Each structure stands twice: as structure tokens, then as C-alpha cells.
Image (cartoon, rainbow, N blue to C red; front, side, top):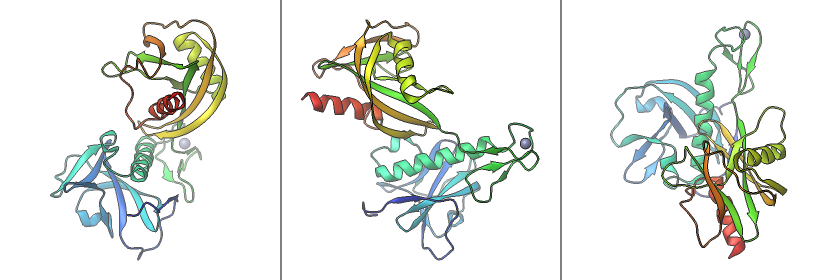
Length: 274
Ligand SMILES: [Zn+2]
């Protein structure tokens, strides 16, 4: 696979004769891979050539000319020789960033499909919508689209330092920047100010968009910002956030790994200071 290929999302699968397709098959939250010894994804004319029992199959789009499908694998079945199931996070760096992103997309589509089989309003079994990625209730017409939950994540700068906090749920002694889900009715900027005030008790200004990252654990979209400290002393609640402080390149604690936009923001800041 060349790096010049690009992914184009789609809903309707191309007609047959398109050659081998790429399959992103998940059993629960683990992806089916080849290990020999490099990690690769199964490519076949049809998924059923693998002889595995499956549930639904969804066309996702094409990577270059190659059709990509998400597949819901049935539980508890032996895998073909040389194949294994892997958690998505562990595959970061082992497959290309493009394949990693499509894997996340596949998981989000499957997770939506598994959790919207019945109408949330009247309980009737849902059908697939003909042209959109949606499930439609044949009784009351309710449409259910794949869920995406936006969250904001902000690097707060104060001179040559930036704020890191330790969430009680973080593994080990890891610190990161401030993140939280956007509430209904809130702008992204309002969410930035509210989350920072709630978690570390300070005010910020000069909130600027940095970039975004789909985060399929299970269906977030991380929206990254930078901001400057505008006032207030750090105060943590001691429950969700157990510690927070100002850090620079000289006193860094354990940081998030390279997969996340939090680390991209931190690395960006440190490069600016270098
Ligand atoms: Zn309904």
C-alpha cells in the first residue's frame, strides 16, 4: 500500500469486480489482524473466504481504489492460522495512521449498529436507512445516526510553562492536559472555559483551535485548543483531579503516549519553547 492513497468515505459499496477489499473485522472491541510477523489487515475478494461467522457488514468507503468494510465478528470461534484479535490502542504504530483511523471509524460504525437495533422511542426493531448511515424505525420513523460525542481538550499556557493535571482514573503516574465532554447547548469555547474552571479553578483567555482527532473509545471526537492563563490559582477537587501544576520541559512528569491529541498539543508546546 502506498502512502499516496487517500480514504474517501461512502455508504454504498461499489459493484463487484473491484478486486480485493480491506476488512476491519471486530469481535467486541478487538480487531482481526494477520501477524506474520508484521501486522496487516485481511484483504480478500469477499470476507466469507475467511470462513468466519459474522454478523453485519458495512461499507465504509475506499482507500484509494480499495473498498473498505467493517465486519461484526461472532464471538467464540477459532481463528485461521496466523490471525489474531488485537485491541485498537495496541495497534497504534503497528499499522499505518490511515489504517488506524479507518479501524476507529469501523469500530464506531459497528458500535452504533450493535446499540441501535431497536427504536429508542417505541422499541420496534429498526431497519437500515436506504441512503444514509442511519437506522430507521418502521413504526414511528425515528432515525438513529452513529453517535459522536465531542470533547474539548486544552493546553493552558502561562509564560514558559503549561498546565498538567492528574486525573484519578489515569493509569500509573500519568499527567495530561484538561479535557471534558461538551454539554448540550454549549459552544466548544464555553466547554473549554467551564471544564477548566471546574477541574482546576482558573480562568483562561485567548482560546484558539488547534486541531481535532476522532477517538473511538468508544465514540468521541476530541477537539483540541490552546489557551492562556488569565487569572486564579490552581485548585483541584481532590476527587476527579487529584493534582495539577505548571510544568515546563525541565520537570515533565509521565505524559500520555503519542497516539493522542493531548500528546500532540504537549509536543507542539515544547517545540515552541525549545
Ligand atoms: Zn419507533
